[in-house]
Picture (cartoon, rainbow, N blue to C red):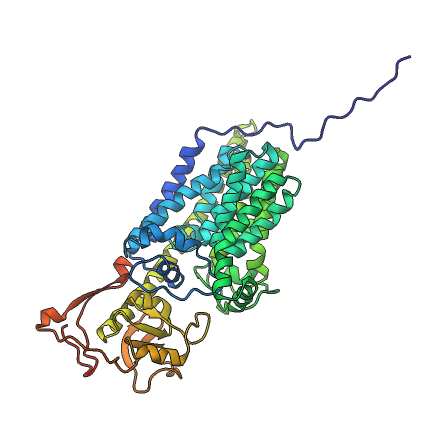
Length: 544
């Protein structure tokens, strides 16, 4: 007799569909997307731009003639390392902007190419275009800020992990995953931790990839940890101080704040503002549905694991900025947007394929054409909104940096010249433009006592700034304030000038010799023009 045997079922696989083959057209298409975004930034963002508050802190650490600003507990030095090649050589903001635009464009292409063996080329190109044309990505592509670099590093790290899980991890994959994780942690340690949590969880059964991620996490955090021991009494003390500066980490629903900030606010703190342009958040409201639809489409196409990993990592990166802090900034969610662009692109590509399906009959062919036109119109409207907000945010940023330049020039005219010290309202960026050291007695950037400020005033010119007709700070010198400038954003600026330090003042032989060129760091907006020096003892100003 013969024994009947039931054949064993084949091993369960996600899909019998073969892995997507890298398309030879992928790289040129991604480069084309990057080139278009570079052109937009060079047209809207870079011309006339100056450094913002946070940028002056990061860039001042990179060398040059301007004293380094106080480096508060939440910050990390990754972006300072990134700008060193330019900032240490030139004070030109334009040169720095062009350097960062080109570097970020190259990183964009590289980060999306990591996914080339997991996702079809058409989906990757669509994802790159979706992410790169968001106004936070366009605006921060040329900025000395860490968030876009965290986004691209997170995208690359998740891609290397997905390739390791589905195709096996070789040496390149291990190095890529570890290096990308290290970059994110180096830029923003908190983002690095929230990135590593899901990636470490899914690689527990893959010891080599798990070790690569853990090593990358430690290597990226090493400078922050060393600095914590050197200046803060240890990592825990630094974390506690960072939490204080950020308003305390805990349950804080900031979803509505993030939505309102999308109308063009780079920082919404506190976000008790009217919601003037709700239309700018339509795409944001649709984002979860598009991502969910893309995950379903990818699963049916055999790409569910890779897309679900991207989606889960994006959710992890978004959690602290939506639910754990009490303020909002659109740049905080850039890492989540970069990863969600993959499922969104899956959904959009599928919608396009459905829209253009003629279904055989002439009437249905016409309907398909109309569907394609409607989809194209929706995407074009979205792009127009992103460009409008980019233009508006850029104009506001240029106005703010111009105000900083104006106040710095007025300080120069009143004798506050390097070496010097500035305290008070907006002292950090204004000191950078004036070439001075910024010293605050309280607040997030508190770095000196009132007694220490008075002691510094005995050695170098020192001023305390007040904006909008505010009261005299308790630590400011007595006497009437000196009007400095009328600004567009903060109103009138005044300065309380300490008595001049006891040092000789050179008398100019001629009016021409008395005039000097004072240049603040920053090239265009940082160039403060020609001003005549002030005699500290008489208050008279020579020259024009």
